[in-house]
Image (cartoon, rainbow, N blue to C red; front, side, top):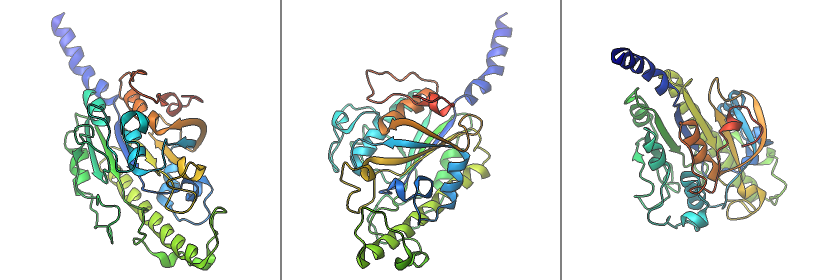
Amino acid sequence: MKHLLLLSCILLAPLLAAEKPNILVILADDCTYSDLSFHGGRNAKTPNLDSLAKQGTLFERAYLGMAMCAPCRSELYTGRMPIRNGCAWNQGASRPGTRAMPHFLGDLGYRVGIAGKTHVKPAETYKFERVPGFDDNCVREPTLPHDLDGVRKFITRDAAQPFCLVVALTEPHAPWVMGDASAYPPGSLRLPPYLADTPLTRQSFSKYLAEITYMDGQVGELLGLLDKEGIAKNTLVIFTSEQGAQFPGCKWTNWDSGLHTSLIARWPGVVAAGRRTPALVQYADVLPSLIDVAGGKPDPAVFDGSSFANVLRGGDKS
């Protein structure tokens, strides 16, 4: 009997491990959600994100607590609102002892890494494994060239252990110096109604759109790497655009164009393709959701957010 039980455990182990998906979270930086075509944007060319939206579920009502980089990222990584985790201003730090994504998913057997921008502290809270290859400085001119070698090594290092990797891109954060602005002639742009139509606005918006397209190219490379390594099917991909861009009425504000974010989830065979959901979610919900899909039980006493794993699996409400 003992031998049969041992054999059963050995045979079931790969199946149980397969139930834990890999997780890839891709963050844009200062990208107004409504400038993306699947949220009604009429200018930016984003073929890779357009494809991702068709392959997964698009959240129409996703929000963050503060339209600033560090606070919203602290919310995303801790499952707590900025005022509760302590990072309630842009160069702030979370309170000592605050636990975040690396702790919670690490407890569930994940390797948890980050490539690119961090902009959160202290290190003890955000104890990600650093993965090289993407620039961590959002105001560098130009952004340093990126390569996928570090990401490739991280996601393929141990096939028996699931990974969670955050790739925090630095585009389209100002200064807008990446991409091909000539693809967006200022005179042909259709500006959002909340922006003043001036020559300077059009010139700036052209450069911003070029960075969105540059960012979209990086998203395409990351998704292509999952395909190449044969792990796309068992990887939950989440893309989010962070808060609004550095235009009036967006970043730093409580307006919809500041606090509303884009959120797409793709997990072949689990998350419905081509679906748009009106489920109301926030950044504080993301970590509890990841814990949920990883087989854990998010504690409502710990998190300000709650799991929307039910929505990922086709439900209407989180």
